[in-house]
Length: 136
Image 1 (cartoon, rainbow, N blue to C red):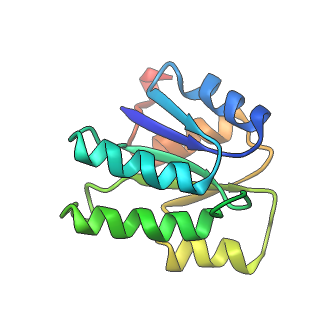
Image 2: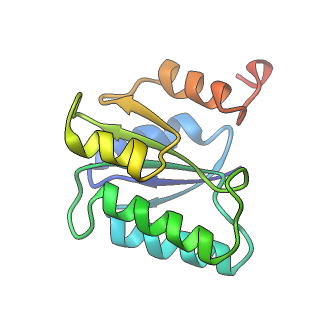
Image 3: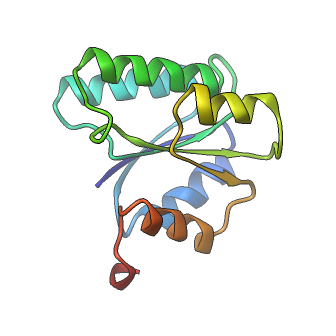
């Protein structure tokens, strides 16, 4: 599995990479603009991401806008809804308009409240069928 971690916070990026490294090859970027470019490049190389962890509040391009652009790129490449990346939004925001927009308008797959912990990350991966219980 290939995963993209998108977060402007070093600790958050590093911790997610630590959790995911037994299950996925991880690329890490620090803002939404870099995420959009990484997804486009992965699709051009026919090596798409299965999973994207994306923070909402980031510089340059924020998470909701980046997610909308990523979904548009996937459509441009003809990626069907079942094959596109599973996007897990991470945020310190609990009930904000940005969270709602990312989940429903941006077509995010799931949401995790920050700070994330290993148990919740692995639970969402199991729920999405990206890892099996015996793999953990």
